[in-house]
Image (tube, rainbow, N blue to C red; front, side, top):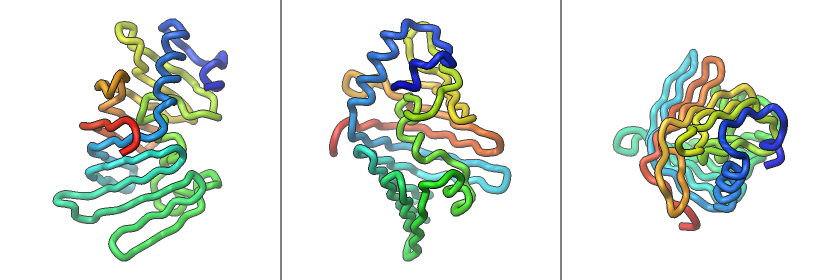
Length: 187
């Protein structure tokens, strides 16, 4: 949250509204997002069904193609990435910058994604800009770490508004996430 208070952020809604919203989102320690993911870079393109489960700093992601073909399970504690696809298993130390790209070919900010998917800036890194929908007060665009994150739609989960269409882009890397169901809390 400290990164949100810096002078580099442009806001068009009252800061208290944004602070209240982010505090309520941050209070959700466990959540699940179910939907689809499309990844595209200069050299590759992938689409998959997505089940993202977050519990504190622990991330579990299941990706699968049509009819479950090519199912991949990803587990991370923020320091290590454990990727399993069929009988194949890769364990990657992701504590250094660019480790994910070097080992997987995808330049994705894994530590920031649990925040960005919920419509929050990732902590510990300056926010370059935030743009809000003046009618709803919800973030429409976030720029952080050189990435541009666009939020095209939101849906209610309990008493919160959570993104359902998220585009993430930096250079040649583009990710599009469409979330059809949010589950807030343990489960």
